[in-house]
Amino acid sequence: MNRASWRGLALVALLACGGSGCAAAGTKVGDAGGAGGNGFRDDRVVLSRYNEVSGVAVGRRWAFVATPRGLAVFDRQFESWLPPLAPDDGYPRNTGQRIVLAADPATDAVWIGGFGELVSYRPDIGAVQRSLVPGQVEVILFDSRDPLGGAFVRSAGQWTRVTETGFTSPVDASQLPPAGSRVVPPTPEQVFQEFPALRSFQGLLTRDEGSLRSWPLSAVARAPERSEVWLGTWGGGAFQVDPQFSTSRPRPFGLLTDDASAVALAADGVWIAGGASYGTERGGLVFASTSLQQWRWLEQERGPLLGTRANDLQVRGTRAWVATDRGVARLDTRVGTDVRAWTGTNGLPADAVYAVAPRERGAWVGTARGLVWVSDSAARRANGRAEDVSAPVVPDVRVRALLLTGDTLWIGSDGGLLLLPPSRDVESARPVRAAAASQEPRLLDPVTAIARSDSLVVIATRDALVRLDLRTGRLLPRLLMADIGQLGGVAALAVDERTIWLAGPRGLLVVTRGADVVRFVPVGAGAVGAAVSDVVLAGEYAWVATTAGLVRLRRRADGTPP
Image 1 (cartoon, rainbow, N blue to C red):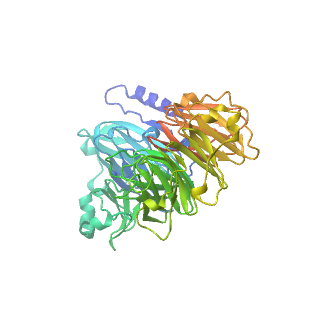
Image 2: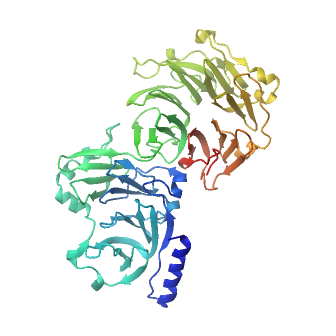
Image 3: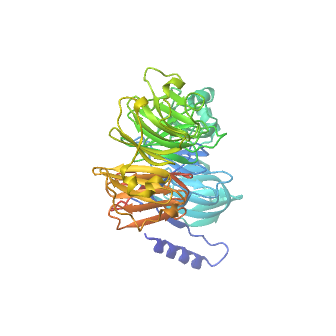
């Protein structure tokens, strides 16, 4: 049924009842993109922090995890996550007091009660239905004699019946199902009474794999068809528990922090670094598969990424290098505890690090006071040492961007574009000015980002874009239609065979390689809702790091945003 048809049904219902006791029609929010991922939500998915759980419900196939930022849905059959149901997709916005969840025993839908509204969501077909109810939803129950009869909802001291199509009608206590026919989600106390060991081993069952920190319990739900319990925590996400053997399995989903500041491609997904401000208690890296079905958290309760902002993230093999405002860190993505860090107190010329370019046994690191080589040995897992860091190759110059092409390092600095040709050792390395700078004076301006795809190298300054042919070193014609001043500065670049993407505080600017299409996507225009700090491209998707989380955009055939 299309949107117009639903509006028509709502109007008919309102006209037919003719009084204050009429049944209020529900509102169909729209196709939310179900398990097949073919709905409109799949074109733009916003990933934020879903580790603060306010409610859990378990149906025959799905486990539903409610948080202040949206609903996460876990497919218990295939052990994978679906894209979340966010407020823009129909999740209740009025969640200031609390969320009440109830899995429908007949349809595999979930009913979500907030303040003044009740939402039903069917992950299998992607249907979202919103109905208005008075006050805060307190209880949701079902009638086992009428599996398709919808739900009974208590709110503001009164009962309302809500049908599958979203129509509401007030009922009194005499119209409720008899006690033996009521299907009500068990309370946490009832679950603990059924499985007493849950209370005894609660601290062990809600402990994460990295820091072995136990998280406070915030929600409990029991599976309807087998001995399985889901525990929601405030900060550690959800845990799938076998209560018979007192074992649990963490089910991470979403980011560790509210925002994402850097993103890097992996073989089957992306790694994300957060933009935490000082004083926050979370730090680490997050992996998300391309399909968003699988997630990993490499969190550090104490470590170099705690409370820092990532300016750049690069992954080479199993090692991730993170440039932050308090030094550079190297993490082994197989073992989250294998971390080394360097700051201004143990070798770097400055704490502020803007760019990193990893190689086999270390990485080039661009800081606020020059470029250095940081040596890393797999045999040493102790913290970084001053002797690991070379003397500055480009001393006392802010280095904001790095790019390796073969053995040549491209350096984007406040002194313009520089090249570091291959050399036998770091001590003999000497940067040179790019030959193209003699023809293009803009390459003498401060460079903020560099990117490459096949034979094209793109260099961004504060207000200009320069393209070079890597094979010949020749300049390509200027992109006169691309006004990068709209971005408020270029924070990151991404290039592939179809497009050039520029990211900045005011949004995205996308240019096709042939320069026949130029699209500016301002912040708040729908595709991106907050300032952009990084972007990477992989096939049909663009991954965009913003101050409101990570955005996965499905690109059009020409490579531009949806």
